[in-house]
Length: 464
Image (cartoon, rainbow, N blue to C red; front, side, top):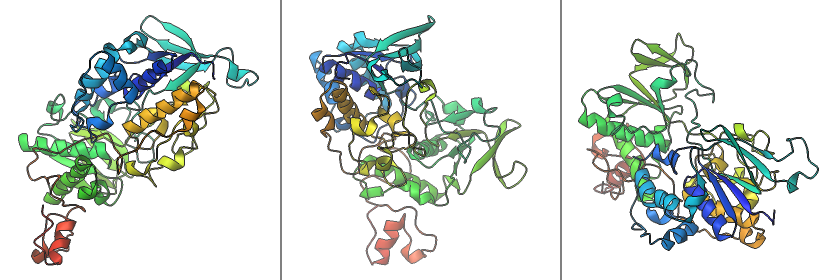
């Protein structure tokens, strides 16, 4: 692919735009196809959510250089943006004020990618043909040709279902309009849907934790709001994270705040709750585990499913992909990102070599490249596309070179500093380890495990 001149990029999120900036710097022509009406369409769905990572880790270097050409002033590097601020101060200026603006096609949903004149079965001469990209833009089917393709379309619009076996729970499809997936804006646009209601949140990742904390804050403001945390696992402490030991203070504070809410009873917990059936019961939703007619069930006014995301490969049927059978990412990448082994902080930087597919010139980048793994870092995505574009340009040395040094413990996207929550734990307090053990007596009572242990050692406490 050393002669590639046109690169189609699917998705105008932060990683897709970074890929386009890298392509421009290499003297090639990017064509960015964005399904939404504006750049950063997926980010707009979680605009209310603060990030764990400060601005320092949110800006791609090549994109920053493009912005500098038009007199852009970078936000303070240590501030933590929300999704909306990421849009307003970075993505929108990059997409509308720089040279990228002439290369982005909005409201252009890609429906298929293939080799021009070759179906998936045909091999001889395949690698020397351009790609055909089909897309819909409101005017009917359109088609374009590209020498290489970078799929940075993300996973936001492909949420995992509520069913514990990876399938939608029985009755889930019928109730889909009444279920929220991901991180609804419970304190803002969606407030009326949750205020004064009994709300269940299913999941144990950062999206679930952030939503539970926001709902607890809503319960302080709106009487009658009851919050229930549904966990498939048995130990809620796994969701509390490293607390004060986390080098990303904002991420540590999130787990600490949830631990305090659980310990105080402001968030009720149902562990070992593997959802199998959903049904309507009057105006409410019945959430059941086991058989529909027995076992455990709760009835709620609203349900938030925050069980993660998965990639959509449906429009890539004619592309030769190699995917790990479990993680659904390139096989060389799977052992580096498997969430059973790695956290955000232990995934090493990687590039074109690990992201390669059997289809020469085709790459999946950004969070979609991680398949079902939740350990993706925005900064890692920027390094991915730098390496990929170098590979497309034929610069093998640059493609192999690692130009990224991750901060200790990594950088994750998700809810940032927790503020204004009565009874929550300050990120600087240094208290961590989950709620206090129930066996702790009055002489060693404390707000959490670390506090109890400190008092058992004769200290005044851990400082929280």
